[in-house]
Image 1 (cartoon, rainbow, N blue to C red):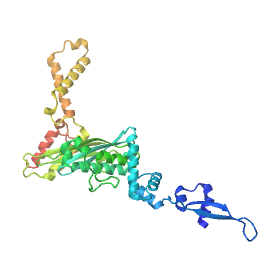
Image 2 (tube, rainbow, N blue to C red):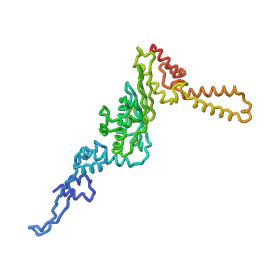
Image 3 (cartoon, one colour):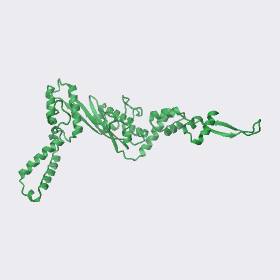
Image 4 (cartoon, rainbow, N blue to C red):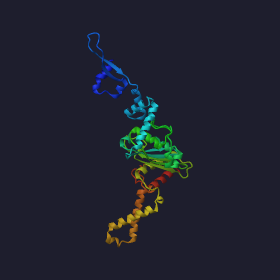
Length: 358
């Protein structure tokens, strides 16, 4: 009675919905006249509802799913306080709402997963930076990257195989991801927990070559981001020739340094031979037009073609230095050579091979 009266007295101060549901709805009714004094008295009565949801269940469901208190309470009511059924109820309801959502998922975050046999970069998009910075989101994309890297079929099959790749119970799997679900479906369910639509934007896989290694690097997007997540990433495979007797640990270190350079230098091509002829032709046309425009119409008509070709050769050489990995100057710090001019990547790799006895 004392707690019921206290609750009633507090109703004018808008007590929380959770307390009302736990204790039931209280009301005062006028009782018949008392035998002593013949005066009417107020007698407190308590009426309990069968659909009251224990706060402990609401809290546990919220911890498991991350959904709001209101949604957790509604789910438990609908499923008669059955926790497992309430989890499924939230997922189904969330999937329906996420499928109808048309908001643009503009914020992206990359994750890197590297195993001895393969590596993977996964890009997942959300609607706001607030979600991509959350610990749960970053845990999920790290798990997905490791999952992709550990699946030979996914690495070999490309994007189509990844759409049907099912989640496995492996280390690092967040409890909010259901084992056996396909990746897009799992992200749809997770979106209902985080309150935003999540999209599997892009995936890149790279297998280690025979007798070689695969390595990667991801540049952090923010200082408090989890290791392995960021805004720029690179994967590279490296093989020694001959591979017999090669120090694989040293080779992995070399590959990791090269991956850091790739993120910083952002090369477009692996070698000069890999530059498409059409791309090179268009670049040289732009170089020619820019040079002639700089000279002016009067001088451009009298300039020797050999002079133009010499200028084009210089511009092409600079294009290679800026866009071809083998021709770029190594950005990663070189041990013991801080005061010297950085060497091209191709020369650095030759020096590394020589120091490894290859």
